[in-house]
Length: 414
Image (tube, rainbow, N blue to C red; front, side):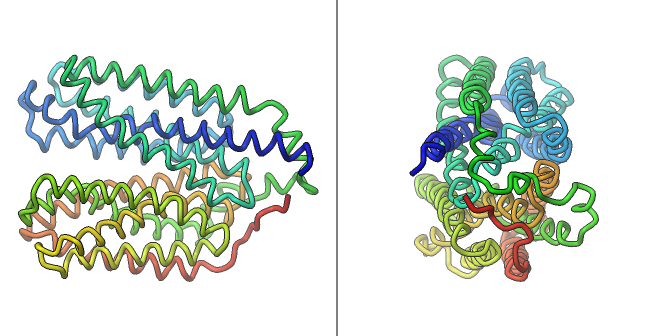
């Protein structure tokens, strides 16, 4: 192994650690996953209904959907260093502002929206963009490893938040989360853009015969005018709506079937494991097989899992657990599928803008799915119609994915 390769590989390990750290304290893990923990104390203090308080979920996701395209363009125009730094500051400031609620739903809704809007680059949209610039041949595995940080954060921060609320109250808990966002996010930023940045461009050029391969790709407007981008956007929306709609209503669905609280907790834990395995396995498999095949079969597994929940009786908990695991596997696989497909089908020249657009579509699916599941229960008295519709949507997405065709931009050789 040459001396040029050794420092690059050490930097790649550092890049993966830093991106995983950043995702572990980003919007998804630190803010979004802790919303359910804050719902009860907020509703209790201000006399809000659970429905009014839980609207923060939709508003934060709406902010993500709106901000994704904007942040994606900022990444391409102003650079990833500035954009991620801006989002870390935005997440910290607006999380702290959540502690200053005075009991008006307007303020609560506005702050929730702006947290989602300004913190977009602390999600995969920002950090995974960094990973795609450092990895070629093992891009899928790198994506899976980096995304594990988000999984770790979604386990740690809800537990930490509940402890803080119990010990110091919900206002100070939000201030504590704000500090974590700033300190841990700042550390990730320093590792990425100060420690790991030195001589990275020179090393990459030394390892590539054609350095311009690093910036090949469609312009943002070319991508928007192509039917391929809209085709991929349809896939992303269908899978997101089907899988995230299920995820938000999982506990309620199981409770309606008289599943005990302890068992519900175990099944929710199984879904967390499914997301982690989906990210690791799907990412690694996309390095060896086409992303269309890996994504297609992963999304079809989600369709099978959704139909299992429709068909099996409530007392077959092992079958319900398998179904939940398969759907969670789909969620994990989609997290790797989107950036991988953007790089291989649209190139890297405007990766941030194109990925941002698809990330916005993913967020819209995260709004539409839970709403449709809720309407199914409210209007029809059952989640079965929503589960059936979600299974059909996932199956259609799987078939569309299998028909994507060959890559337009192959991995460069090192």
